[in-house]
Length: 228
Image (cartoon, rainbow, N blue to C red; front, side, top):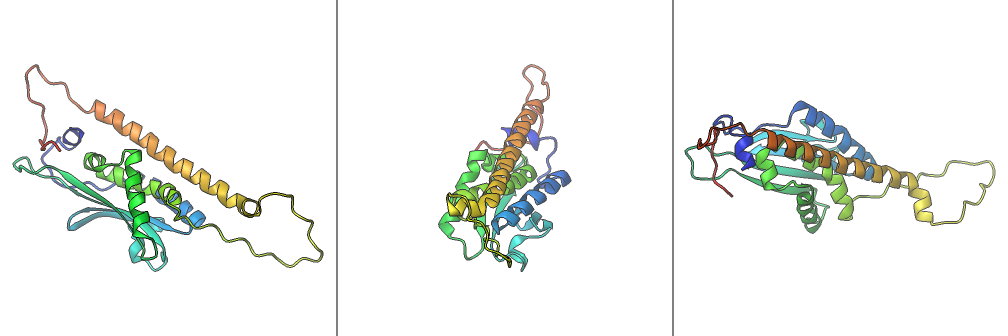
């Protein structure tokens, strides 16, 4: 399987953290989502009981559930375990979406199920945990909006005026007051979807290119793992 190829260069069972550029690319996307939606977003990668990586819109290394600046938050948490060559157990990954107490558990499950639409299933987290957890974090704003969790932007307060303002053009009051927020949100969600789609395509091409040439009849090199 792909997980065996990527992790088969040695027998290490260490779960790798996201690369520096993956973390650096993810934080500003989550920060823009917080500004638009009022929800903190983050990621947590563990090799239980070891925490391999955490991050959020507040920065790399800052967990949303542990910072008082995030009263409302959603976090994707992946626990990945690699087994040794001598073990009969298979590598495995458990992926959860957690949130602050004010967010309905059913909505969080909807967000969690939505990750698979982007190819972010358990196998993807086994193949490349760091890549998968940061990409999953960037999909949270889109999935939260679909689940009805994204809060609308507050209507700006009217400032003092010396004379009555002209009547606004006829139309829908909701969208007229919030068109800027709507455009920003749509742009953010499209960017997150594009970010994940391009990254997934690159990962698939990388997987196809990592299989070394083998002599006829030779066994493939690398760490073995049980088929799921």
